[in-house]
Length: 222
Image (cartoon, rainbow, N blue to C red; front, side, top):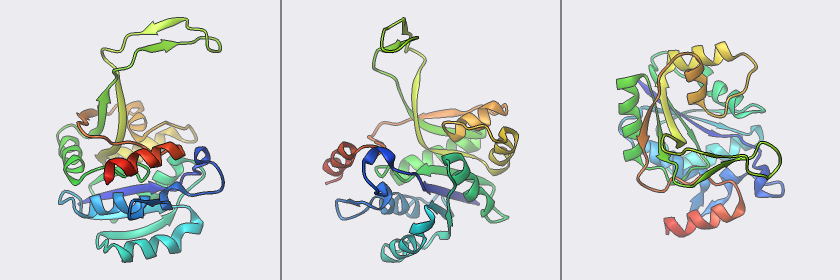
């Protein structure tokens, strides 16, 4: 069985004010509903676990009911960090779950087709993520904003979500990390010796971080 863990428990600090970006309106539905619907419509995913802020548990139930998310098995409160929130989701996966797909709800443009590709790739190579090659010129600034070097970009990728893993591998990776933080779940398994395959993203998969991102994604979804 494949369980998707959709993470929507972040602080949304860069959105300004006391808002939860995952529950803001995006075109005609809350941001989190877009990801829920994409995973609901993906045949490669059997169940969904949603991780949200504690104060959004009731609102999440209402959203799931409103949009008919039949695969949703559990809604749990997240932790202080993204890693803690992912682990909260891992703890409630059903015993017959063999693979997990982790996705940030703040990426509402994800499609069922891309999700399925990542799941398929993870079954061939144990772990997989969606990503895009870096096209910008990269500069390293050893001190402040003064450029100290240009970083070769030929082998660099910008990694996104969803990211898929064997459940056992991801649990073992986080157990090995202890209190150390990682920037994404791939880094956790990488540190534990698991190779990760990248599936190239050919469509926009923008992460909503600042108010301008919400406007941009809305314009693309209309």
